[in-house]
Image (tube, rainbow, N blue to C red):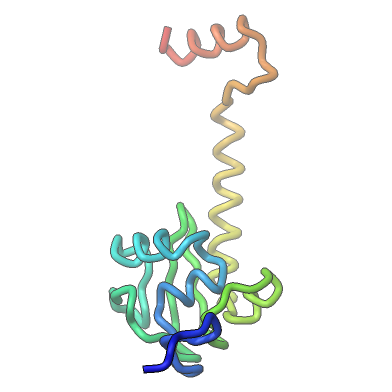
Length: 138
């Protein structure tokens, strides 16, 4: 058996594990976080719950739940290596409905925050006490 070199990969060019693809496309900072999201049901592959080692193919649909937002994307290209963000953005295409839904949700959050004042670090101690008293948490 020949020794492995750093350029060797366990995968062919047309097959990539789902956790590696999500990491390379920069949806998750580490592969461990990608695996956790997949096993936690935050990722759907063509409508089904996959395993982290599921093989991704170009043209497949992924639904990713990242916080309160859901991304619906089409896989465009495969890459095992994590590259620059500009290269990662070419690996997928988000659907127009997904972009619109995320924009609507972000707008709802902005509108709701106007009616829910939050104490900030710039508020004085007196302002924070008044805010707690108004909220009934005194």
